[in-house]
Image (cartoon, rainbow, N blue to C red; front, side, top):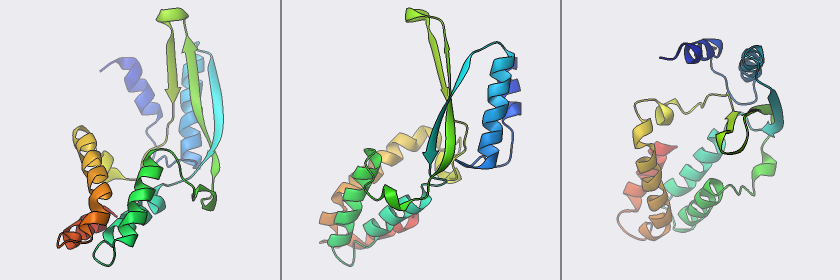
Length: 171
């Protein structure tokens, strides 16, 4: 492995670096200091973010899991699923936001320019993002999207229990 990459990864070896937490800020500070020490100009892009998307995703999964009770709940769940993954979250104002930041490094010009955007938090969803599962992430996401779209219709069939159980496990 590239020695520079090994040094960077060692810098970021901290306990869980949850988004918008002190350990994320420490990882950011270390990475920024390393890059500036190597002579790279670094910019900070501050923003306010949520500490976890878990409650949102669990809420969506639970709405979809209620398919055996009524098609109304999975209809709301399907709408929430597609809004969430399209970047539109009308319920976002309900979530607390905390200071976070991205790191931006730009080197070179024109077609030979390098742009590095770094966000140094770690996801709490270890199961979904485990290195052994990354290769199947797209397939899993597409299956979830398909089932979310079909859930309101499947709620009217004997498959309602299977779809409900699937999304209950996802929650």
